[in-house]
Structure formats: structure tokens, C-alpha cells
Image (cartoon, rainbow, N blue to C red; front, side, top):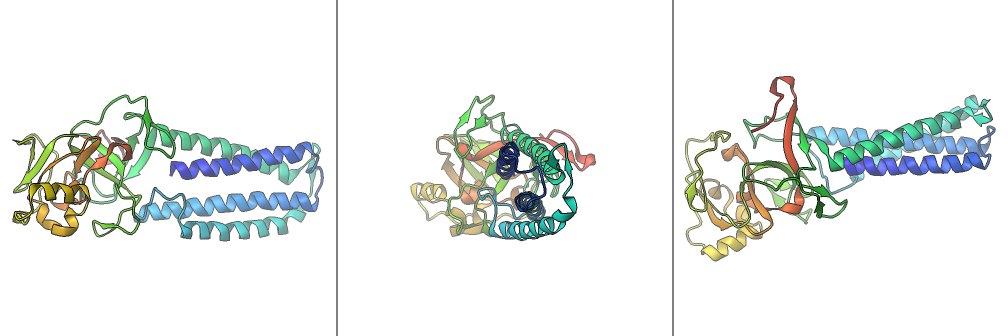
Length: 331
């Protein structure tokens, strides 16, 4: 959302800059065809922004969120339709707004005031969301009972460093990713046609807990987690819903091939649910992290589709703010 707001802010800023330029040229002193046309442009911009943001919000509520795309074709289509309607209405209504005040057409004066307000507010919001804090909604039950479906939380985005826009490079890292951290990350896929977890997850944001650090050897046996050969016993946040366990189905695969399949993100496609309770051992590659959901029997995570590169981690889950009954810091 922060990138969407940034470019909307840039769009409104361009309109504001051109409006001041035309004002200095004396283009807005009377009700002319140019004045009405420029007022229609502003109305089209506002209508486009409102329609696109409304469409994005509805998609977010449905869980149909792709963060790697600025706007989907459907969102753009709704925005362009709204823009055309807004421009037509503004042109038709322009004749009723022909008054001039302080040497400036009333419509142009109001448009510039609104343009300046929207430009400042949207640009500031996008910077805050990109660099510092972002709101996130829990889309599934993979982290129950730490988070429930529909919980709203803030994500601390600067704790792992400020990410340079459109790169994976981070600066000024205040803290390193640690085992046990709950992180929000972009799903590690570069192919929109790749199917994982029952569908295409390309560009979507996930939330999981870090259980394996770079260089760790991670294994799951009969549902129990082992890291570097030792049983991880202190996991009060985990939940196991199934009484039965899937048998191991990968005994005929060599350890080297198993590692390759896992790193290439095809292990889940090959063995499906059979790696839920008996997984690994695998060695977490350098610069990557193995993540799992707290709801271990209901989580599609690194067991199925591999590790998460550090550059895709957006931030750390910080504070649940909705619903009020669940407000607090996650553990």
C-alpha cells in the first residue's frame, strides 16, 4: 500500500506544480475552456484515486493482495472509469462555478488547496508506511493462537533496517533477525504462475515465526522440531490440532537431493502433507531463514516452499491494535 500511496502523492504533486505554473501564467483568472478543462483534470484525478483505493481496500479485505504489483488491471479499470465520470461531471458543472475571487477562478482556488492537502498527507503517509510502521491484517489461521484471522497489527519496518525503494538493500539495521521473531515478508517467488499452498502466492505478504537461522540444520520428527540436533522444547506459542501424524514418505530420497528439492521450492509439490510431521533435515542457506506458523498442523510454511531470503523480510510484528480485546504485544 505504501508504494501505491507514494505514486498517488507524486501524481497529485505533479498536478499541484502544473497548477501553480498555469496560475503564474494568468490562466485561471476567468472561466475559460482551459480553466474548465483543468478543473476536469483535477476531478478525474480525485475520482481515479478514490476508486483505486476503494478497490485496493476491498481486495485487501478479501485477502487478494499482491504487493509486487502497483495496481492490478481490475483496479486500474475501475479507476479509469471513475476518472472519466468525474471529468465529465466537472465539465458539466463548471458553468455554475464561474465566479472569480481575488483574481482567481473559484474552482481553481479550491482545486489547488485540495491538491496541496492530499499531496502532503499522502506523501507523508507513504513515507511512514514504507520506512517505519505498516498496518497488517492476519489473513489465515496459520499463526493461531498467537494471532487470529482478522486481527490487525502494526509491523515495525525499521528494526531490521531501512530498505532502499525497489531494492532488497537495507541501511541502518537496528537489530538482526533472531530465532523466535515473528516476521512479515513477501512470499519468495518470482513466478506469478507458480502455485504453492493451493494457489499463486506471488507478491503476497505472509507472517510466520523464525525457527531456523542461516546455517542451522532443521528437522521435524513426528511433529517435534529439532534445530542442530536438539529438540526445541520451549515453544509455548505453538498449537497442534491433529492427534495423528503423517508417516515419513521421503526415505528413498538422498540427503543431497532432499536439500536441493527444498532449496528449489518443490518439496511440497512432491510430497504434499507428508512433510508436515516428518521434514528434513535441511541446512538453512546463508542469508535466509526457515519460518513456520505457530499453528503447526495448519500452516503452509518453509517446510513446503523453502527458506525466506533476508531481503524479502519487511519487518517484525509489533503490536495488535484490533480488536480491542486482543490488544497487546505478541510473544
